[in-house]
Length: 335
Ligand code: 5GP
Ligand code: MN
Image 1 (cartoon, rainbow, N blue to C red):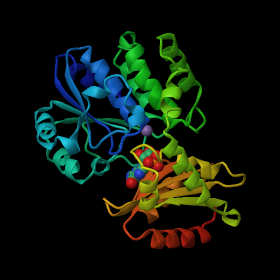
Image 2 (cartoon, rainbow, N blue to C red):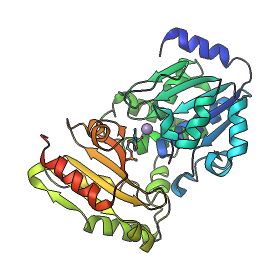
Image 3 (spheres, helix red, strand yellow):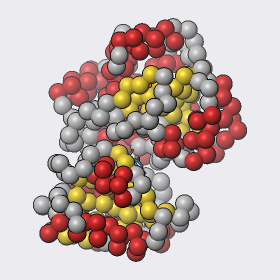
């Protein structure tokens, strides 16, 4: 981050402010971890801070400290809109463009006359923020929040609560310290967080070992539905709305399923297609290994984006048509 930007932000934060902190729509561990870490940090300095999530966060993140204070824009539009209208500062964390909060909240954000601060690790950030800490080299926004606190010269204010939120985002976005972007600094930060009391062996349990039986059955179905194209080093799977209903899907249940497609020997590109009847779309997650750019693929063909090795997108035609399009594209890929 530029020195003069840090100084300007430090000056802004020198007196109590009204601050809204926003994660992307369908927030994951990094989005919730980073926004809540910043919420706890800012609250220490008497700022009137609040996290406003565009829509509900999954149950497996509900144990995060402070999650009970999070306002949900979709459920509480009037209140959230007036908080946003009155905010002196709006932090947007873990996303790079207003459209990532969904259509209605996007319009509200675009209409605000406020100081935006973006902290994010996605490619191609939009140009709406007065101050930007945007760097794709980081594996998580949470790691950047740790740095941001350090830039402000306030490292001594880090504590177990803030650390727990930061640890959660680093852990989930790095695939438990496995994905590219995980480096010595990541581990040094984590070591410091553990020294602060963060329960590093308990948190994975809360995040990953809290499934319902139905969720496991849904995973089983997704694994059965998997198609493998060894000649294209590609696999994919699908879940229809009917299958989601059969296994009593709740938000968060499909998290991480896409990664199984990469666990097959020789596969470097995979996708999961999940039907959403309410939104009339097929939501897609892409994962790749090595040089294949899933972000570019998602941008070029499925109205999406993300990172090189983990991206997402959407399709507005039927599951059958979407799969046909994907198979055709894959047959012409040079991986
Ligand atoms: P996931 O597949 O876990 O939902 O998302 C993987 C990555 O791609 C995340 O960094 C996420 O923010 C990004 N992503 C997911 N869906 C979309 C999308 O529809 N548009 C864009 N631009 N990014 C997405
Ligand atoms: Mn992230």
